[in-house]
Length: 207
Image (tube, rainbow, N blue to C red):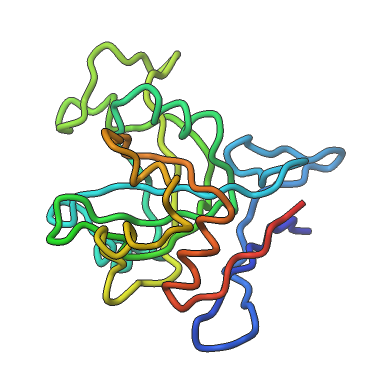
């Protein structure tokens, strides 16, 4: 007997939502269910939305599309505020705007969804990794990641100059002067505006 979580996404080629690949999130035992916290969907609160920044020369949306199951762990984040979002706030089913930084122009290149919530970032413990942190203890991890799956490329990307022209996005964290966080919250209204610009159907809010 399997217990599955299904994430509803949009399909830009259809007016009907489609169901993503079922996500195994609970493993039943003979008397009770055992589930890892990072594999449980958000409970008791609406889904949230985020923007993740990445240098496309290092890891762009095309790289994510090429991954097995179009999925990767969002590793290498070494800012405490961004870490807190990854560890404490981002949950399965949340929407992600994949933002190409250091591009010409920088912009939103794709849409993804969270398929595994915060769990220790293995690169922190790997001496061969450029993100290795010798002070990070596996017994009490400092750095966390989430896993995301590609949903839809935005081609051409929504460039930063274009985003700045949209009055509904004036308060967006991305557009705030001096904003440098690589993981940023996005409001539901901002998400809907960007979905409209990208030609996609917004993911439905879950209560």
